Length: 78
Image 1 (cartoon, rainbow, N blue to C red):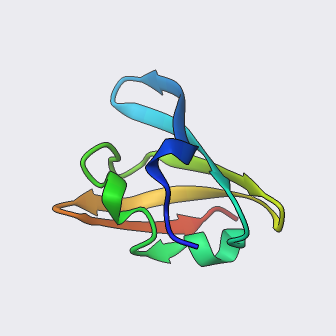
Image 2: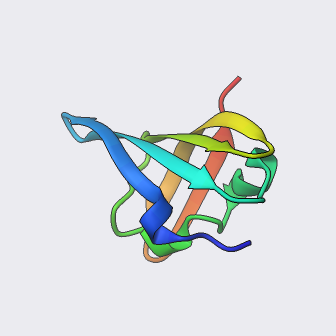
């Protein structure tokens, strides 16, 4: 499945940091980590943000390593 913007929500925001939640359908949390999955949200995300991902295939916390000009690179914590 592809990224769906309506499944992305802000849980907390302070001092330029945003904690996001993304509810994935059938995509595994591993598929979401890395380059490209969150590209459509590049204008809202910033490096250092964290994304809590939950879905039918598990949960994971991702760190946004880069978000700029239509590209988001994320990596799993831990």
